[in-house]
Image (cartoon, rainbow, N blue to C red; front, side, top):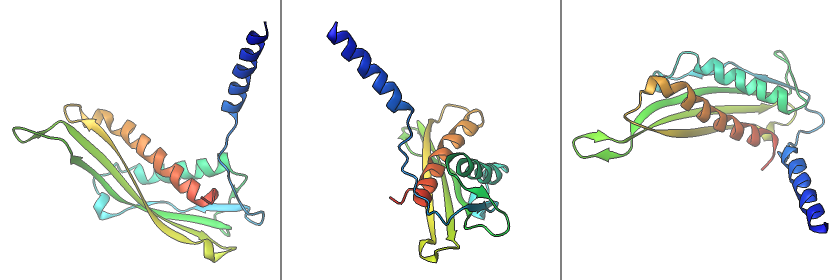
Length: 167
């Protein structure tokens, strides 16, 4: 009977800890507001879907609203983000005999500028890049939204961590 109680205790403990978020967000108390400027597409990202810059902007706004205590302020924010999509390309990566490839790679790069109005020492500009590989025999148009979402989610997580976790 004791073993059964120990097992149940471990299961409950695992479920509780799985629900807890260990993000380690660290926002100074004097920072209350944020602003995310609309992202732009550079000529190097001309192949990107037309809505990608708007989607990226909205997803960063949503992530900050939902995962921090900050509120949006379009006029005098304490911190702000601006950015541009600098690369959107499909690259063959696994050559096969007969001038074909078995894998292609979708790569997206974003340049972010972070500005802290309360402490300019925290300001930075940084490039973020990620990719997803896919079978070259698959229809890219059918995969594009899913691949793009995966890449953007990873890039946004890194942007968020650099801005709010301090590690």
